[in-house]
Image (tube, rainbow, N blue to C red; front, top):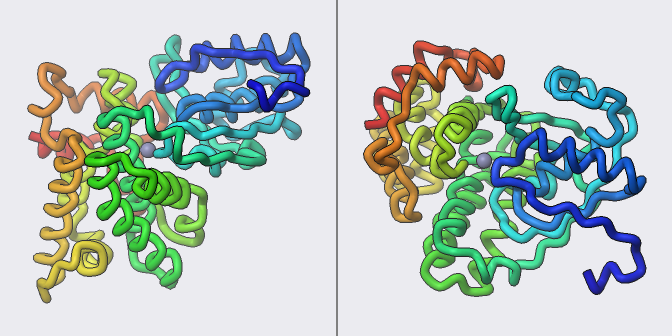
Length: 334
Ligand code: ZN
């Protein structure tokens, strides 16, 4: 606040974890009243996602723009967003996506508006000093899965993106456990930077992307309130096993280049890569089995119903994960 001394500042607090559309609309009302010309998001992914959505909501003519935005229709000119990042994980400070939950619609879905990509981001790793182990573990695993969802798909002629993805994964594998153990300045710097690079758009350029773990995870968070990263660690190993055939070539490459797996056989290498991933999530303190989130009982039927409401009925890089496949994947999360 001291550095903003020369600016006229209106504060808006109370953005929830998994930000609510209804709260963002309240902020939009206030921002219109005071004619805000820039939004400064100070926080982690939830605050930044809300701020980016807010930039469009302020400029929208419709006071209830959910359906318009969900259909990709945004105002031409929006209020720009700058960020002060306090919790690295989502890469939201450098990308165009906001994941927003609507209480009245009982939905949690992503919105992408290129104009909402922040105009600047201040990333100071010392802000991570006050984070607890759970937040740090979640941060590392969320960033890890962001890379995986863009990398473990189908092989293509994108050696730069794949090579960079592998560096990011190896960095998170090396520095994630150190961050949990000592939360040292070096560990904070490396994780904050890796999490940013994981989802600023670079490694996703020109590659097939998956995002099915995230869409199923969003449904689980919306239904049961489980932390975002913890839904991903639950779903991803089962989903990778379910898709082992179609992803085998990239999975084997991943196992060898990221986990140093020595197996010559691609199928065996792929299996070992998935097992190493699951073990990493566990070491970071995240759940990998449904019993790890007891007493919450996750229902595949409820997840499928949420995905149908969200219009997410063909997931995966091949659009081959529908209701039946989601049920099979969730049945394997035992
Ligand atoms: Zn995520």
